[in-house]
Amino acid sequence: QRAEWRKLREEPTVSTDGVHVELAANIGTPNDVAGVIDNGGEAVGLYRTEFLYMGRDKLPSEDVQYNAYKTVLEKMAGKPVVVRTLDIGGDKELPYLDLPKEMNPFLGFRAIRLCLDRQDIFRTQLRALLRASVHGDLRIMFPMIATLVEFRDAKALLEEERANLIGEGVAVADHIQLGIMVEIPSTAVLADQFAKEVDFFSIGTNDLIQYTMAADRMNERVSYLYQPYNPAILRLVDMVIKAAHKEGKWAGMCGEMAGDSVAIPLLLGLGLDEFSMSATSILPARSQISKLSRADMQELAAKALECGTAEEVVALVEAIQV
Ligand code: PEP
Ligand code: MG
Image 1 (cartoon, rainbow, N blue to C red):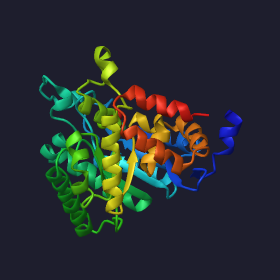
Image 2: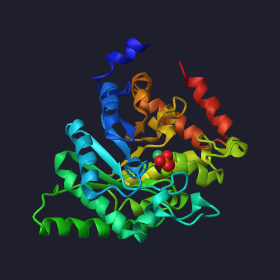
Image 3: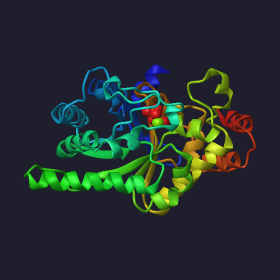
Image 4: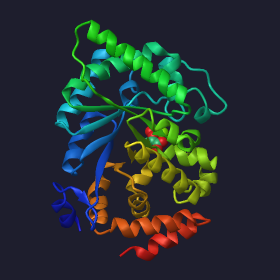
């Protein structure tokens, strides 16, 4: 099996009926890029920048960040790199920010909420990203977007920093795709409105499932409710993909679900354009997709959307697995 996967390293990801999808990798540091290339990744679909901020005793400077982003872009040699702006809070803490303890950290002051409040932190990251943008195909993505106003506010800060840099005579790429994580139900439900203003969506199922099912992703006792295959989740994913395509935008997924062999047939059928996963899942996923017909998976997905339970969905998928 391994030998069969290795052969797919340099191949595109194509279904039996000729539909191409992009298989990307999630990374946390520039050192992870070697594994992406070794496993035949076509892009970086999620660069979690939190690690730049963690494991040190103060905020990373603009130059430290610039160097990290530039390194990833250069190593990916022109392939797309989606960098997610700081997603701190919830399960990810930054001791030196000295944030007050919260009753519900996952529902609290985190990610884009913190960045829109602490503009000093956010602007530094945006400047570093804009400066790095000339070194490859950089795409920027905001985490935990709950409202269109948050997206517009974040985008306005990006545009301000772009203008500042150009004013300072610094080179910045002409067009940088700008997208959002869809990981809060309000955003999935309102995806048609977001799709008019963003360049792409990346569905963050790790959080989308916990917020939709009201089941803490870290709590064992409610893990039975953490159901990727629940038809409610599939319907949200379906809405997001349809909304993107209606506006000519692409939709990806960077939660764990994107690399899950039970979910992949369904996601292919729902029309997902980009699957971002841990690097080691890429070749198995490519092998799986190369044996599936997208037309058949569309039928499967349509049936799954009409199911009542996650168990029924799993039974449908298991019936087709060869
Ligand atoms: C997600 O929520 O699905 C996601 C990819 O982000 P993280 O796991 O970093 O919260
Ligand atoms: Mg998340």
